Length: 273
Ligand SMILES: [Zn+2]
Image 1 (cartoon, rainbow, N blue to C red):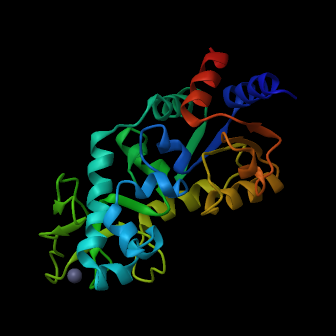
Image 2: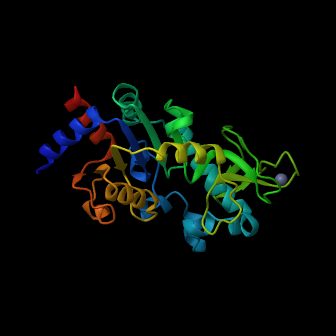
C-alpha cells in the first residue's frame, strides 16, 4: 500500500474502532515545540553550561543529580517547565480527544511524555497514564512518604540562564526536605509512581483492544513500542505514526504512516470527515 492507501485504511479503522489505545511519545509533543532528547544537538543548544561540564540529559535527569548537582538538576526541569508553559497542546491532541468521544466505545492514552499536555488538552483524567510522570507534580526527594502533589506554578524556582543554576527550590510539605519532579528519572528507585493511573490502565487492558495508535516514539525509550508489539501479536490492529521509518523496527506496524504527529492527525481527521 502507498501512503495514501495506508491513510485511508487507518481512517477507516479509527472510525470503526471500539476500544482504542493511544501510545504517545516525544514526537507527539515535538509539534508543540517541546524539544526531544533524541535531537541531542538541538536540545543542548539551550544549555551551554551543561555541555561545557559534559553533563548529559541522563546525568541531570536522575536522583543522583538532585543530590550532587542540585542547582543544575532543578535548572534543567525549571527550564522545561517554563518551555512547556510557553507552549500549548497542538490541534492533534484535541482531534485525539474528539475521536475518543465520537468513535470509540472506550479510549485510553498511555504516554511517555511528562509535559502534561494530554491532561491540559482536556482528556478524561481517568483515561490517561503518564507512565514517566509529569513535570506538573512534585514528590519528596527523600521519598519520606508515597505522596505526590500538583504544582503548576511558573516560575517555580529562581533560574540563572547564564550559569543554568536554579535556587529557591520547592520543599516537601511533610518533612521539609527538597522536593523533586514526580517524574521517573534515569536510575530512579525513588519515584513514587501514580497508583490511580496504574489501576485505570490495568482496568482498560482487561478487555480486548481493537486498535492501538503509536505516535512519535523515538525507540530510544521503547516503552510504548513494546506495548504496541505485544498488542499486535494478540490481534489488535496497529497504526504507527512517525516521520522516521527506522523507528518502526520494534513494533513493525503494517500501517506505518511516515508523518509528523500533527500532520497525521489533521490528515486522518479530514479523511474521516
Ligand atoms: Zn518529605
